[in-house]
Image (spheres, one colour):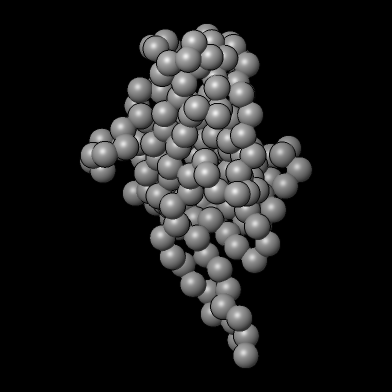
Length: 150
């Protein structure tokens, strides 16, 4: 019988499964979209953290104090959506160094599972166009996988 193993997982914009797209000014735009591979699930818990750096096409860090960020869980058809972070001001999620100041996910204590083929999406809304290629993020979450059966 296969054993289920939960392990820490650092997800970043450099993951080969991540799809990225530039944002559209004044609209919620999917900047990064991660589709969970087969045989794996992600677990999001309240103690897990998220950090992001957003750059617009000026090119410079987003300076608009009203820029917002949110993270969603979407089913495989992208018709059902669960908000797991935000919407919150961009400045609340831009800390990368101090673990006590990093943004925390807003999920129930029991956590939220993002199962295989479902999506984890990071979206932003700003007055300017977000340049995804010069922006980045990291999430410290958990990954669940099954071991190979003998």
